[in-house]
Image 1 (cartoon, rainbow, N blue to C red):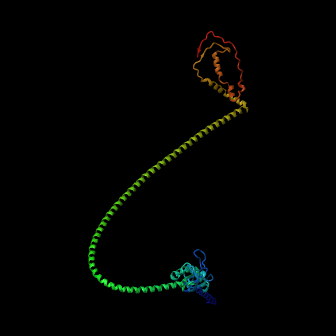
Image 2 (cartoon, one colour):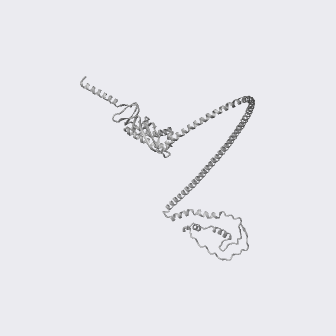
Image 3 (cartoon, rainbow, N blue to C red):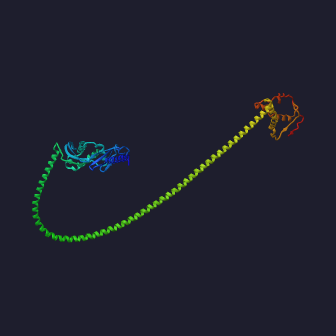
Length: 473
């Protein structure tokens, strides 16, 4: 083993020893009469904030170097003299209450935390002064709510109120109340002294009265004893005889009372049995009545439910049927409307197609006439002339003449017979082509002819027929 290895081992051993020594030096034990307060980085509280300190009473704790430190709070009781003067009572009388309070740091977890936050680092005199101020204020408050008689005579109630109020306030700074000792209570006006003198005088008078009453009772008792002795001897004999008679009477009365009680007991038992039987019968009738009412209500509810359900079903059926009829009518109307629309659309397309074809045909006619519209119109009219004449003839074709009587007397002035004139006039009643074209807003083409003037009638005397031959057609 070389020297370097030995040096390394020695250094390593020193490091280990120093670490162990540091650990043991930072591992602190808390005595039973102290509270160890560890402060620094001591963890988180329940609300997530950093804790100000950790308090330990008894046991031991490792103090982390650098990040933690510790101090001790002494649990030794602290005696605090409280010489309260001129405290105003409930009766507006100022009194002096000299007392001594013994306090100490509490070992309750929450109160220890208050002590660590408010008393750590304070000297004993400073803690005494702080506690004395709190005790003075609470004493004055308690005395102001109590009468002097209560404070002076009922010390337990007074001390209980002091302990309750003072300890609540002391816990806020980490202290607890150990003992309260009120030495004496006095006042400047002498009210308490007067109460003492009154009590003493009353006690003396009560004692004197009691002695006198006892002596009087003794004399009266002696005289009464002698009188009672004489009376009692005489009365004893009379009472003995009377006692025998009374005893016999009481025996007879006792027997009579016994028989009376037995009869009364029998009567009560019989009445109770009948009452119970009547109650049982009444309850039976009531139960039957309730059952009948329940059955009636159930049948009524069942009937109402059946009727209501049936009515609702019928109502729903009517509504569904009405909706179905309305939907059928709507669909039928929509179908008819669609059919009419389709028919009218087809007719419109047919008319449109006819007009388109007519326009195309007319365009071909104009094209055949070398673009001359008048010539094309003449061609159209020439093509339709036969149809126009046919239409004029058709106008009188279906005229029905059942019987025509003609008296023809030969030729007339125009060289025609009357029958010929009749037929010619009938044909002239048909509108000529020129008038047909004029009614249509057109003019008859010249190549079809012009309108001639009507020949003037030649006045001549009709030739009288020598003989009229009736012709019947």
